[in-house]
Amino acid sequence: MDEWLDVEYGQYSAPCSPIIYNVIVKPMHGEVIDQQVVGTNLEKLKKTLDVYEACLSQCKYLAGDVISFADLNYFPSTYYIMSTEYGSVFDSYPHAKA
Image (cartoon, rainbow, N blue to C red; front, side, top):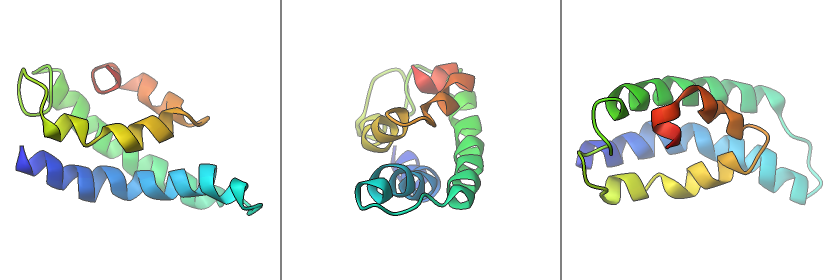
């Protein structure tokens, strides 16, 4: 489980945070979205989702067949990304989306 927490911090939240900041926070402050930052981080996110998809096609949850803190740790970033126009990025990853 610890390795999935490390992956969440370094490989999942790292690209999610700039997307969330640019798409949700910046507009609230009247700032312009940096589409280059969003695009670059969407590509990074897709690479991470490729890994998750492979894992989740083998087991129900990241750390096995029972939900754990590792899975719950992904909820906040996932929630915010899915609430934006970029939430469709998860459509190509049915196991990760579930």
